[in-house]
Image 1 (tube, rainbow, N blue to C red):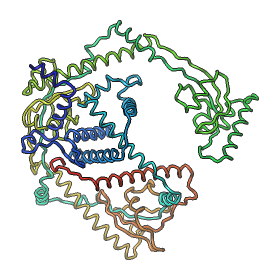
Image 2 (image 1 turned 120 degrees about the horizontal axis):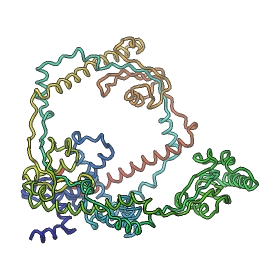
Image 3 (image 1 turned 60 degrees about the vertical axis):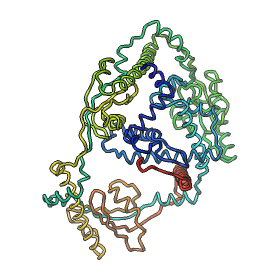
Image 4 (image 1 turned 135 degrees about the vertical axis):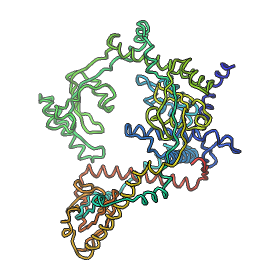
Length: 636
Protein backbone atom coordinates (compact mmCIF):
# COMPACT_ATOMS: atom_id res chain seq x y z
CA UNK A 1 0.00 0.00 0.00
CA UNK A 2 2.75 2.44 0.98
CA UNK A 3 4.69 1.56 -2.16
CA UNK A 4 1.65 2.24 -4.34
CA UNK A 5 1.15 5.61 -2.65
CA UNK A 6 4.83 6.40 -3.06
CA UNK A 7 4.71 5.57 -6.78
CA UNK A 8 1.88 8.01 -7.25
CA UNK A 9 3.38 10.75 -5.08
CA UNK A 10 6.83 10.50 -6.66
CA UNK A 11 5.46 11.09 -10.16
CA UNK A 12 5.93 14.52 -11.71
CA UNK A 13 2.37 15.59 -10.99
CA UNK A 14 2.77 14.45 -7.40
CA UNK A 15 5.89 16.58 -6.99
CA UNK A 16 4.09 19.65 -8.30
CA UNK A 17 1.21 19.16 -5.86
CA UNK A 18 3.55 18.32 -2.98
CA UNK A 19 5.75 21.34 -3.73
CA UNK A 20 2.77 23.68 -3.69
CA UNK A 21 1.51 22.22 -0.41
CA UNK A 22 4.92 22.41 1.27
CA UNK A 23 5.65 25.98 0.18
CA UNK A 24 2.14 27.10 1.17
CA UNK A 25 2.50 25.54 4.63
CA UNK A 26 5.93 27.17 5.04
CA UNK A 27 4.52 30.56 4.13
CA UNK A 28 1.13 30.56 5.85
CA UNK A 29 0.98 27.65 8.26
CA UNK A 30 -1.66 24.98 8.61
CA UNK A 31 -3.94 27.32 10.53
CA UNK A 32 -5.03 29.11 7.37
CA UNK A 33 -6.55 25.85 6.10
CA UNK A 34 -8.75 25.61 9.15
CA UNK A 35 -10.40 28.94 8.38
CA UNK A 36 -13.65 29.22 6.47
CA UNK A 37 -11.92 30.58 3.36
CA UNK A 38 -9.03 28.71 1.78
CA UNK A 39 -6.05 30.93 0.92
CA UNK A 40 -5.44 29.86 -2.68
CA UNK A 41 -3.95 33.15 -3.82
CA UNK A 42 -1.96 36.04 -2.35
CA UNK A 43 -2.85 38.57 -5.04
CA UNK A 44 -4.83 38.95 -8.23
CA UNK A 45 -3.73 40.91 -11.28
CA UNK A 46 -6.66 41.44 -13.65
CA UNK A 47 -8.25 38.25 -12.28
CA UNK A 48 -5.03 36.24 -12.75
CA UNK A 49 -4.21 34.71 -9.37
CA UNK A 50 -0.72 34.69 -7.88
CA UNK A 51 -0.39 31.59 -5.74
CA UNK A 52 1.36 31.35 -2.38
CA UNK A 53 3.81 28.95 -4.01
CA UNK A 54 4.71 31.51 -6.69
CA UNK A 55 5.30 34.19 -4.05
CA UNK A 56 7.36 31.79 -1.90
CA UNK A 57 9.57 30.91 -4.87
CA UNK A 58 10.11 34.60 -5.73
CA UNK A 59 10.86 35.38 -2.09
CA UNK A 60 13.38 32.55 -1.84
CA UNK A 61 15.09 33.56 -5.09
CA UNK A 62 15.40 37.17 -3.90
CA UNK A 63 16.80 36.03 -0.55
CA UNK A 64 19.27 33.71 -2.27
CA UNK A 65 20.46 36.56 -4.53
CA UNK A 66 21.09 38.74 -1.48
CA UNK A 67 23.08 35.94 0.12
CA UNK A 68 25.15 35.43 -3.04
CA UNK A 69 25.90 39.15 -3.39
CA UNK A 70 26.78 39.72 0.26
CA UNK A 71 28.61 36.40 0.78
CA UNK A 72 30.08 36.14 4.28
CA UNK A 73 28.63 39.56 5.14
CA UNK A 74 25.07 38.19 4.85
CA UNK A 75 23.41 38.22 8.28
CA UNK A 76 19.93 36.61 8.40
CA UNK A 77 19.33 38.03 11.88
CA UNK A 78 19.10 41.61 10.58
CA UNK A 79 17.01 40.75 7.53
CA UNK A 80 13.59 42.39 7.41
CA UNK A 81 11.60 39.36 6.27
CA UNK A 82 8.36 41.33 5.94
CA UNK A 83 9.93 43.94 3.64
CA UNK A 84 11.69 41.24 1.61
CA UNK A 85 8.42 39.36 1.14
CA UNK A 86 6.68 42.60 0.17
CA UNK A 87 9.41 43.33 -2.39
CA UNK A 88 9.10 39.80 -3.78
CA UNK A 89 5.34 40.22 -4.16
CA UNK A 90 5.83 43.53 -5.98
CA UNK A 91 8.25 41.80 -8.34
CA UNK A 92 5.75 39.02 -9.11
CA UNK A 93 2.99 41.57 -9.75
CA UNK A 94 5.31 43.55 -12.04
CA UNK A 95 6.20 40.44 -14.06
CA UNK A 96 2.53 39.50 -14.33
CA UNK A 97 1.61 42.97 -15.60
CA UNK A 98 4.34 42.86 -18.26
CA UNK A 99 3.44 39.31 -19.26
CA UNK A 100 -0.23 40.21 -19.71
CA UNK A 101 0.65 43.30 -21.75
CA UNK A 102 3.02 41.28 -23.95
CA UNK A 103 0.27 38.74 -24.63
CA UNK A 104 -2.18 41.56 -25.36
CA UNK A 105 0.25 43.01 -27.92
CA UNK A 106 0.48 39.61 -29.60
CA UNK A 107 4.16 39.04 -28.79
CA UNK A 108 5.13 35.38 -29.01
CA UNK A 109 8.17 33.25 -28.28
CA UNK A 110 8.79 30.37 -30.65
CA UNK A 111 9.56 26.90 -29.35
CA UNK A 112 13.01 27.11 -30.96
CA UNK A 113 13.84 30.38 -29.18
CA UNK A 114 12.56 29.00 -25.87
CA UNK A 115 14.66 25.86 -26.25
CA UNK A 116 17.76 27.87 -27.24
CA UNK A 117 17.33 30.11 -24.19
CA UNK A 118 17.02 27.20 -21.76
CA UNK A 119 19.82 25.19 -23.37
CA UNK A 120 22.20 28.16 -23.13
CA UNK A 121 21.99 28.30 -19.32
CA UNK A 122 25.50 27.32 -18.08
CA UNK A 123 24.18 25.44 -15.02
CA UNK A 124 22.22 23.14 -17.33
CA UNK A 125 25.25 22.19 -19.42
CA UNK A 126 27.90 19.49 -19.16
CA UNK A 127 31.11 19.98 -21.15
CA UNK A 128 29.54 23.01 -22.83
CA UNK A 129 26.48 21.09 -24.07
CA UNK A 130 22.92 21.03 -22.75
CA UNK A 131 22.32 18.05 -20.46
CA UNK A 132 18.80 16.67 -20.14
CA UNK A 133 19.80 14.88 -16.93
CA UNK A 134 21.17 18.11 -15.42
CA UNK A 135 17.97 19.89 -16.48
CA UNK A 136 15.74 17.31 -14.80
CA UNK A 137 17.90 17.37 -11.66
CA UNK A 138 17.73 21.17 -11.43
CA UNK A 139 13.94 21.12 -11.75
CA UNK A 140 13.67 18.34 -9.17
CA UNK A 141 15.74 20.30 -6.67
CA UNK A 142 13.36 23.24 -6.97
CA UNK A 143 10.15 21.23 -7.01
CA UNK A 144 9.36 22.33 -10.58
CA UNK A 145 8.05 20.51 -13.65
CA UNK A 146 9.41 21.01 -17.18
CA UNK A 147 6.01 22.29 -18.35
CA UNK A 148 5.75 24.80 -15.51
CA UNK A 149 9.34 25.99 -15.84
CA UNK A 150 9.07 26.36 -19.62
CA UNK A 151 5.77 28.23 -19.27
CA UNK A 152 7.34 30.69 -16.81
CA UNK A 153 10.44 31.09 -19.00
CA UNK A 154 8.29 31.80 -22.06
CA UNK A 155 6.42 34.49 -20.11
CA UNK A 156 9.69 36.09 -19.00
CA UNK A 157 11.00 36.14 -22.57
CA UNK A 158 7.74 37.70 -23.75
CA UNK A 159 8.08 40.41 -21.11
CA UNK A 160 11.72 40.99 -22.09
CA UNK A 161 10.65 41.30 -25.72
CA UNK A 162 8.11 43.95 -24.72
CA UNK A 163 10.45 45.94 -22.48
CA UNK A 164 13.34 45.72 -24.94
CA UNK A 165 11.25 47.31 -27.68
CA UNK A 166 10.15 49.99 -25.26
CA UNK A 167 13.55 50.92 -23.84
CA UNK A 168 15.87 50.58 -26.84
CA UNK A 169 14.44 53.76 -28.36
CA UNK A 170 15.84 55.89 -25.52
CA UNK A 171 18.30 58.58 -26.61
CA UNK A 172 20.04 61.64 -25.17
CA UNK A 173 20.51 64.92 -27.06
CA UNK A 174 23.76 66.88 -27.23
CA UNK A 175 22.17 69.70 -25.19
CA UNK A 176 21.24 67.24 -22.44
CA UNK A 177 24.79 65.90 -22.40
CA UNK A 178 26.16 69.43 -22.07
CA UNK A 179 23.81 70.20 -19.19
CA UNK A 180 24.74 66.97 -17.43
CA UNK A 181 28.46 67.68 -17.81
CA UNK A 182 28.08 71.21 -16.44
CA UNK A 183 26.66 69.66 -13.28
CA UNK A 184 28.96 66.65 -13.12
CA UNK A 185 32.16 68.69 -13.53
CA UNK A 186 30.91 71.54 -11.38
CA UNK A 187 33.29 72.95 -8.76
CA UNK A 188 32.38 74.76 -5.56
CA UNK A 189 34.14 76.96 -3.04
CA UNK A 190 33.06 76.53 0.57
CA UNK A 191 33.98 76.28 4.22
CA UNK A 192 32.37 74.34 7.05
CA UNK A 193 32.65 73.94 10.80
CA UNK A 194 31.75 70.63 12.49
CA UNK A 195 30.47 70.34 16.07
CA UNK A 196 31.27 66.71 17.01
CA UNK A 197 28.54 65.11 19.10
CA UNK A 198 31.16 62.93 20.81
CA UNK A 199 32.59 65.93 22.69
CA UNK A 200 29.47 66.01 24.86
CA UNK A 201 29.47 62.33 25.89
CA UNK A 202 31.58 62.75 29.04
CA UNK A 203 29.10 65.24 30.47
CA UNK A 204 26.07 63.00 29.92
CA UNK A 205 24.57 61.17 32.89
CA UNK A 206 21.55 58.98 32.18
CA UNK A 207 19.37 58.48 35.25
CA UNK A 208 17.42 55.33 36.20
CA UNK A 209 14.22 57.31 35.70
CA UNK A 210 15.21 58.13 32.11
CA UNK A 211 16.06 54.49 31.42
CA UNK A 212 12.72 53.30 32.85
CA UNK A 213 10.78 55.94 30.93
CA UNK A 214 12.40 54.98 27.64
CA UNK A 215 11.84 51.27 28.32
CA UNK A 216 8.15 51.81 29.10
CA UNK A 217 7.67 53.87 25.94
CA UNK A 218 9.51 51.40 23.67
CA UNK A 219 8.80 47.97 25.14
CA UNK A 220 7.96 46.56 21.70
CA UNK A 221 11.46 47.47 20.50
CA UNK A 222 13.00 45.12 23.07
CA UNK A 223 11.13 41.90 22.41
CA UNK A 224 13.07 38.66 22.61
CA UNK A 225 11.92 36.86 19.44
CA UNK A 226 10.50 33.37 19.54
CA UNK A 227 13.28 30.82 19.22
CA UNK A 228 13.74 27.07 18.91
CA UNK A 229 16.34 24.36 19.21
CA UNK A 230 16.28 21.84 16.40
CA UNK A 231 17.36 18.28 16.00
CA UNK A 232 18.25 17.21 12.48
CA UNK A 233 19.67 14.52 10.25
CA UNK A 234 21.87 15.31 7.29
CA UNK A 235 22.21 13.55 3.94
CA UNK A 236 25.56 14.59 2.50
CA UNK A 237 26.95 13.94 -0.95
CA UNK A 238 30.44 14.43 0.48
CA UNK A 239 29.86 11.48 2.83
CA UNK A 240 28.40 9.38 0.02
CA UNK A 241 31.45 10.04 -2.15
CA UNK A 242 33.63 8.16 0.36
CA UNK A 243 31.74 4.96 -0.46
CA UNK A 244 32.23 5.19 -4.23
CA UNK A 245 35.09 3.57 -6.11
CA UNK A 246 35.58 3.83 -9.88
CA UNK A 247 36.72 0.62 -11.57
CA UNK A 248 39.29 0.58 -14.35
CA UNK A 249 36.85 -0.91 -16.89
CA UNK A 250 34.28 1.78 -16.10
CA UNK A 251 36.93 4.48 -16.44
CA UNK A 252 38.16 3.10 -19.78
CA UNK A 253 34.62 2.94 -21.19
CA UNK A 254 33.95 6.50 -20.09
CA UNK A 255 37.21 7.67 -21.65
CA UNK A 256 36.36 6.04 -24.99
CA UNK A 257 32.92 7.67 -24.97
CA UNK A 258 34.32 11.10 -24.09
CA UNK A 259 37.72 11.34 -25.68
CA UNK A 260 36.52 13.28 -28.72
CA UNK A 261 35.10 15.99 -26.45
CA UNK A 262 38.37 16.05 -24.46
CA UNK A 263 40.36 16.95 -27.54
CA UNK A 264 41.89 20.40 -27.45
CA UNK A 265 40.78 22.55 -30.38
CA UNK A 266 43.14 23.74 -33.08
CA UNK A 267 44.77 27.00 -32.02
CA UNK A 268 46.57 29.62 -34.05
CA UNK A 269 49.17 32.16 -33.00
CA UNK A 270 49.04 35.43 -34.90
CA UNK A 271 50.25 39.02 -34.81
CA UNK A 272 48.44 41.99 -36.27
CA UNK A 273 48.66 45.70 -36.94
CA UNK A 274 45.40 47.54 -36.29
CA UNK A 275 44.64 50.93 -37.83
CA UNK A 276 41.55 51.87 -35.85
CA UNK A 277 38.49 53.31 -37.60
CA UNK A 278 35.13 53.89 -35.91
CA UNK A 279 32.10 52.37 -37.71
CA UNK A 280 30.53 55.83 -38.21
CA UNK A 281 33.68 57.49 -39.64
CA UNK A 282 33.20 59.56 -42.83
CA UNK A 283 34.53 58.48 -46.21
CA UNK A 284 37.59 60.72 -46.11
CA UNK A 285 38.75 59.29 -42.78
CA UNK A 286 38.12 55.73 -43.97
CA UNK A 287 40.09 56.35 -47.14
CA UNK A 288 42.98 57.91 -45.22
CA UNK A 289 43.17 54.97 -42.76
CA UNK A 290 42.94 52.38 -45.53
CA UNK A 291 45.82 54.04 -47.40
CA UNK A 292 47.95 53.97 -44.23
CA UNK A 293 47.26 50.26 -43.78
CA UNK A 294 48.08 49.51 -47.42
CA UNK A 295 51.33 51.50 -47.16
CA UNK A 296 52.34 49.47 -44.10
CA UNK A 297 51.51 46.22 -45.88
CA UNK A 298 53.71 47.24 -48.81
CA UNK A 299 56.57 48.03 -46.40
CA UNK A 300 56.22 44.54 -44.87
CA UNK A 301 56.28 42.91 -48.29
CA UNK A 302 59.37 44.96 -49.12
CA UNK A 303 61.13 43.45 -46.08
CA UNK A 304 60.31 45.83 -43.21
CA UNK A 305 60.12 44.33 -39.71
CA UNK A 306 56.47 43.49 -38.88
CA UNK A 307 56.95 43.82 -35.09
CA UNK A 308 58.61 47.23 -35.35
CA UNK A 309 55.85 48.57 -37.57
CA UNK A 310 53.25 47.21 -35.12
CA UNK A 311 54.94 48.95 -32.19
CA UNK A 312 55.02 52.23 -34.09
CA UNK A 313 51.65 52.25 -35.88
CA UNK A 314 49.20 49.73 -34.37
CA UNK A 315 46.27 51.20 -32.43
CA UNK A 316 45.65 48.00 -30.45
CA UNK A 317 46.78 48.87 -26.88
CA UNK A 318 46.84 45.21 -25.87
CA UNK A 319 49.30 43.99 -28.50
CA UNK A 320 51.17 46.95 -30.02
CA UNK A 321 53.91 47.02 -27.36
CA UNK A 322 54.67 43.33 -28.01
CA UNK A 323 54.98 43.75 -31.77
CA UNK A 324 51.31 42.94 -32.44
CA UNK A 325 51.50 39.49 -30.80
CA UNK A 326 48.01 38.14 -30.04
CA UNK A 327 49.15 34.80 -28.66
CA UNK A 328 47.30 31.53 -29.33
CA UNK A 329 43.53 31.53 -29.86
CA UNK A 330 40.91 29.01 -30.94
CA UNK A 331 38.34 29.44 -33.68
CA UNK A 332 35.48 31.71 -32.56
CA UNK A 333 37.53 33.87 -30.21
CA UNK A 334 38.13 36.68 -32.69
CA UNK A 335 35.48 38.51 -34.73
CA UNK A 336 34.25 36.37 -37.68
CA UNK A 337 36.12 38.26 -40.44
CA UNK A 338 39.41 38.01 -38.51
CA UNK A 339 38.78 34.32 -37.74
CA UNK A 340 38.07 33.44 -41.35
CA UNK A 341 41.35 34.92 -42.56
CA UNK A 342 43.53 33.69 -39.68
CA UNK A 343 42.31 30.09 -40.05
CA UNK A 344 42.87 30.06 -43.80
CA UNK A 345 46.55 31.09 -43.70
CA UNK A 346 49.82 29.19 -43.50
CA UNK A 347 52.51 29.94 -40.86
CA UNK A 348 54.64 32.94 -41.93
CA UNK A 349 52.00 34.24 -44.33
CA UNK A 350 50.87 37.90 -44.15
CA UNK A 351 47.28 38.74 -45.10
CA UNK A 352 45.95 41.48 -47.30
CA UNK A 353 44.42 44.50 -45.56
CA UNK A 354 41.26 43.32 -43.77
CA UNK A 355 38.47 45.53 -42.41
CA UNK A 356 36.43 44.63 -39.29
CA UNK A 357 34.26 46.65 -36.94
CA UNK A 358 37.47 47.86 -35.25
CA UNK A 359 39.23 49.15 -38.32
CA UNK A 360 41.88 47.85 -40.78
CA UNK A 361 44.06 44.84 -39.88
CA UNK A 362 47.22 43.31 -41.30
CA UNK A 363 47.56 39.75 -39.98
CA UNK A 364 50.65 37.56 -39.84
CA UNK A 365 50.17 33.89 -38.90
CA UNK A 366 53.03 32.81 -36.62
CA UNK A 367 52.22 29.24 -35.58
CA UNK A 368 49.58 26.47 -35.59
CA UNK A 369 48.76 24.02 -32.83
CA UNK A 370 46.79 21.06 -34.12
CA UNK A 371 43.94 19.27 -32.35
CA UNK A 372 45.18 16.85 -29.67
CA UNK A 373 43.35 14.04 -27.87
CA UNK A 374 44.79 13.49 -24.38
CA UNK A 375 45.68 9.96 -23.27
CA UNK A 376 43.74 8.15 -20.57
CA UNK A 377 46.51 8.83 -18.07
CA UNK A 378 46.57 12.53 -18.92
CA UNK A 379 42.83 12.84 -18.32
CA UNK A 380 42.49 10.21 -15.56
CA UNK A 381 42.09 12.66 -12.67
CA UNK A 382 39.40 14.68 -14.46
CA UNK A 383 37.44 11.63 -15.62
CA UNK A 384 37.54 9.92 -12.22
CA UNK A 385 36.24 13.11 -10.61
CA UNK A 386 33.41 13.34 -13.16
CA UNK A 387 32.41 9.69 -12.72
CA UNK A 388 32.49 10.04 -8.94
CA UNK A 389 30.32 13.16 -9.12
CA UNK A 390 27.82 11.41 -11.39
CA UNK A 391 27.67 8.45 -9.02
CA UNK A 392 27.27 10.76 -6.02
CA UNK A 393 24.44 12.64 -7.77
CA UNK A 394 22.61 9.42 -8.62
CA UNK A 395 23.07 7.94 -5.14
CA UNK A 396 22.18 11.22 -3.43
CA UNK A 397 18.84 11.59 -5.23
CA UNK A 398 18.07 7.91 -4.72
CA UNK A 399 18.62 8.31 -0.98
CA UNK A 400 16.82 11.67 -0.98
CA UNK A 401 13.67 9.84 -2.11
CA UNK A 402 14.13 7.37 0.74
CA UNK A 403 14.68 10.24 3.19
CA UNK A 404 11.49 11.92 1.94
CA UNK A 405 9.46 8.74 2.44
CA UNK A 406 10.77 8.16 5.96
CA UNK A 407 10.23 11.78 7.02
CA UNK A 408 6.52 11.48 6.12
CA UNK A 409 5.99 7.91 7.27
CA UNK A 410 7.50 8.65 10.73
CA UNK A 411 6.71 12.34 11.34
CA UNK A 412 6.95 12.09 15.11
CA UNK A 413 10.68 11.34 15.39
CA UNK A 414 14.03 11.28 13.60
CA UNK A 415 15.04 8.00 15.22
CA UNK A 416 13.63 5.82 12.44
CA UNK A 417 15.41 7.87 9.79
CA UNK A 418 18.68 7.70 11.69
CA UNK A 419 18.42 3.94 12.28
CA UNK A 420 17.33 2.97 8.77
CA UNK A 421 19.69 5.25 6.84
CA UNK A 422 22.60 5.32 9.27
CA UNK A 423 22.40 9.07 9.75
CA UNK A 424 23.52 10.78 12.96
CA UNK A 425 21.02 13.00 14.81
CA UNK A 426 22.44 16.41 15.72
CA UNK A 427 21.11 19.30 17.83
CA UNK A 428 21.29 22.98 16.98
CA UNK A 429 21.86 26.10 19.02
CA UNK A 430 18.91 28.49 19.46
CA UNK A 431 17.63 29.99 16.21
CA UNK A 432 14.90 32.54 15.47
CA UNK A 433 12.75 33.10 12.41
CA UNK A 434 15.64 35.11 10.95
CA UNK A 435 18.10 32.26 11.39
CA UNK A 436 21.02 31.72 13.70
CA UNK A 437 24.38 29.94 14.04
CA UNK A 438 25.18 26.54 12.59
CA UNK A 439 22.31 25.02 10.67
CA UNK A 440 20.34 28.23 11.24
CA UNK A 441 22.51 30.00 8.66
CA UNK A 442 20.48 28.35 5.89
CA UNK A 443 17.44 30.45 5.01
CA UNK A 444 15.23 27.45 4.21
CA UNK A 445 15.83 25.90 7.62
CA UNK A 446 14.54 28.89 9.59
CA UNK A 447 11.52 29.22 7.30
CA UNK A 448 10.49 25.56 7.65
CA UNK A 449 11.29 25.37 11.38
CA UNK A 450 8.73 28.11 12.10
CA UNK A 451 6.09 26.69 9.76
CA UNK A 452 2.78 25.50 11.22
CA UNK A 453 3.44 21.84 10.49
CA UNK A 454 6.86 21.72 12.14
CA UNK A 455 6.50 24.28 14.94
CA UNK A 456 2.90 23.80 16.05
CA UNK A 457 2.15 20.21 15.00
CA UNK A 458 5.56 18.86 16.02
CA UNK A 459 6.20 16.98 12.77
CA UNK A 460 9.40 16.37 10.90
CA UNK A 461 10.09 18.79 8.06
CA UNK A 462 10.37 17.63 4.48
CA UNK A 463 13.98 17.31 3.29
CA UNK A 464 15.51 20.73 2.58
CA UNK A 465 18.42 20.84 0.14
CA UNK A 466 20.43 23.61 1.79
CA UNK A 467 23.39 23.22 -0.58
CA UNK A 468 23.96 21.10 -3.69
CA UNK A 469 23.98 17.47 -2.56
CA UNK A 470 23.36 18.43 1.07
CA UNK A 471 19.85 17.92 2.47
CA UNK A 472 18.52 18.01 6.04
CA UNK A 473 15.33 17.01 7.84
CA UNK A 474 14.66 19.03 11.00
CA UNK A 475 12.24 18.94 13.92
CA UNK A 476 11.69 21.23 16.90
CA UNK A 477 13.06 19.87 20.18
CA UNK A 478 12.67 22.95 22.38
CA UNK A 479 10.73 26.19 21.99
CA UNK A 480 10.68 29.57 23.69
CA UNK A 481 7.86 31.96 22.76
CA UNK A 482 8.48 35.64 22.16
CA UNK A 483 8.57 37.80 25.27
CA UNK A 484 9.50 41.35 26.28
CA UNK A 485 13.10 41.69 27.46
CA UNK A 486 13.56 42.42 31.15
CA UNK A 487 14.74 45.93 31.87
CA UNK A 488 18.07 44.73 33.24
CA UNK A 489 18.68 42.74 30.05
CA UNK A 490 18.51 45.85 27.89
CA UNK A 491 19.65 48.55 30.32
CA UNK A 492 23.00 49.05 28.58
CA UNK A 493 21.32 49.35 25.16
CA UNK A 494 18.88 51.93 26.49
CA UNK A 495 21.65 53.94 28.15
CA UNK A 496 23.51 54.02 24.82
CA UNK A 497 20.37 55.10 22.94
CA UNK A 498 19.43 57.84 25.40
CA UNK A 499 23.04 59.03 25.55
CA UNK A 500 23.14 59.32 21.76
CA UNK A 501 19.89 61.25 21.74
CA UNK A 502 21.20 63.68 24.37
CA UNK A 503 24.57 64.29 22.71
CA UNK A 504 22.84 64.82 19.35
CA UNK A 505 20.59 67.40 20.97
CA UNK A 506 23.51 69.21 22.60
CA UNK A 507 25.48 69.21 19.34
CA UNK A 508 22.41 70.62 17.56
CA UNK A 509 21.94 73.37 20.11
CA UNK A 510 25.64 74.34 19.97
CA UNK A 511 25.63 74.23 16.16
CA UNK A 512 22.57 76.42 15.89
CA UNK A 513 24.18 78.95 18.25
CA UNK A 514 27.24 79.08 15.97
CA UNK A 515 25.05 79.42 12.87
CA UNK A 516 23.31 82.38 14.47
CA UNK A 517 26.66 84.05 15.20
CA UNK A 518 27.78 83.55 11.59
CA UNK A 519 24.51 84.96 10.26
CA UNK A 520 25.14 88.02 12.44
CA UNK A 521 28.51 88.65 10.81
CA UNK A 522 31.13 86.50 12.62
CA UNK A 523 33.17 84.43 10.14
CA UNK A 524 33.78 80.71 10.44
CA UNK A 525 37.51 81.47 10.52
CA UNK A 526 37.02 83.42 13.74
CA UNK A 527 35.26 80.46 15.36
CA UNK A 528 37.66 77.72 14.22
CA UNK A 529 40.12 78.23 17.10
CA UNK A 530 37.82 76.30 19.41
CA UNK A 531 39.70 72.98 19.73
CA UNK A 532 36.47 71.01 19.97
CA UNK A 533 35.46 72.08 16.44
CA UNK A 534 36.67 70.85 13.05
CA UNK A 535 37.18 73.47 10.32
CA UNK A 536 37.59 72.88 6.56
CA UNK A 537 37.88 75.37 3.71
CA UNK A 538 38.36 74.78 -0.01
CA UNK A 539 38.12 76.36 -3.47
CA UNK A 540 37.39 74.61 -6.73
CA UNK A 541 36.36 71.25 -5.22
CA UNK A 542 34.50 68.69 -7.32
CA UNK A 543 31.85 66.24 -6.21
CA UNK A 544 33.20 63.30 -4.23
CA UNK A 545 36.52 65.03 -3.51
CA UNK A 546 38.66 63.25 -0.94
CA UNK A 547 39.79 64.86 2.30
CA UNK A 548 36.34 66.15 3.24
CA UNK A 549 33.35 64.67 5.02
CA UNK A 550 31.43 63.00 2.16
CA UNK A 551 28.05 63.68 3.78
CA UNK A 552 28.89 67.38 4.06
CA UNK A 553 30.19 67.52 0.47
CA UNK A 554 27.00 65.86 -0.81
CA UNK A 555 24.93 68.48 0.99
CA UNK A 556 27.08 71.38 -0.22
CA UNK A 557 26.43 70.34 -3.84
CA UNK A 558 22.68 70.49 -3.20
CA UNK A 559 22.73 74.10 -1.96
CA UNK A 560 21.45 76.90 -4.23
CA UNK A 561 23.96 79.22 -5.89
CA UNK A 562 25.10 82.25 -3.90
CA UNK A 563 23.50 85.55 -4.90
CA UNK A 564 26.32 87.90 -5.86
CA UNK A 565 28.84 88.15 -3.01
CA UNK A 566 26.37 86.94 -0.41
CA UNK A 567 27.29 83.40 0.66
CA UNK A 568 24.74 80.67 1.35
CA UNK A 569 24.73 79.69 5.05
CA UNK A 570 23.09 76.59 6.43
CA UNK A 571 23.18 74.24 9.41
CA UNK A 572 23.21 70.50 8.74
CA UNK A 573 22.69 67.67 11.22
CA UNK A 574 24.74 64.64 10.13
CA UNK A 575 23.72 61.00 10.48
CA UNK A 576 26.22 60.37 13.29
CA UNK A 577 24.80 63.25 15.34
CA UNK A 578 27.45 65.84 14.49
CA UNK A 579 26.21 69.29 13.52
CA UNK A 580 27.79 71.27 10.68
CA UNK A 581 27.65 74.96 9.82
CA UNK A 582 28.22 75.33 6.06
CA UNK A 583 29.18 78.40 4.02
CA UNK A 584 28.97 78.22 0.21
CA UNK A 585 30.74 81.11 -1.56
CA UNK A 586 31.26 80.09 -5.20
CA UNK A 587 29.88 77.78 -7.91
CA UNK A 588 31.70 77.14 -11.21
CA UNK A 589 30.05 74.94 -13.85
CA UNK A 590 31.98 72.45 -15.94
CA UNK A 591 32.81 73.43 -19.53
CA UNK A 592 31.23 71.01 -22.07
CA UNK A 593 33.75 72.13 -24.70
CA UNK A 594 36.53 70.56 -22.62
CA UNK A 595 34.74 67.23 -22.22
CA UNK A 596 36.89 64.34 -23.58
CA UNK A 597 35.16 62.23 -26.22
CA UNK A 598 35.41 59.05 -24.14
CA UNK A 599 33.75 60.85 -21.22
CA UNK A 600 30.99 62.05 -23.55
CA UNK A 601 30.42 58.47 -24.75
CA UNK A 602 30.33 57.11 -21.20
CA UNK A 603 27.96 59.85 -20.06
CA UNK A 604 25.68 59.29 -23.04
CA UNK A 605 25.54 55.58 -22.26
CA UNK A 606 24.84 56.22 -18.58
CA UNK A 607 22.11 58.77 -19.26
CA UNK A 608 20.49 56.47 -21.81
CA UNK A 609 20.42 53.69 -19.23
CA UNK A 610 18.83 56.05 -16.71
CA UNK A 611 16.25 57.06 -19.29
CA UNK A 612 15.53 53.42 -20.14
CA UNK A 613 15.00 52.64 -16.47
CA UNK A 614 12.74 55.65 -16.01
CA UNK A 615 10.77 54.81 -19.15
CA UNK A 616 10.22 51.25 -17.99
CA UNK A 617 9.25 52.39 -14.49
CA UNK A 618 6.70 54.83 -15.93
CA UNK A 619 5.34 52.14 -18.25
CA UNK A 620 4.89 49.66 -15.39
CA UNK A 621 3.33 52.37 -13.22
CA UNK A 622 0.82 53.08 -15.99
CA UNK A 623 0.03 49.37 -16.36
CA UNK A 624 -0.49 49.16 -12.62
CA UNK A 625 -2.72 52.24 -12.61
CA UNK A 626 -4.97 50.72 -15.27
CA UNK A 627 -4.94 47.20 -13.82
CA UNK A 628 -7.32 45.69 -11.29
CA UNK A 629 -4.96 44.48 -8.56
CA UNK A 630 -6.13 42.83 -5.35
CA UNK A 631 -3.61 42.03 -2.60
CA UNK A 632 -4.83 40.01 0.35
CA UNK A 633 -4.01 41.72 3.61
CA UNK A 634 -2.89 38.46 5.18
CA UNK A 635 -0.31 37.98 2.40
CA UNK A 636 1.56 41.25 2.99
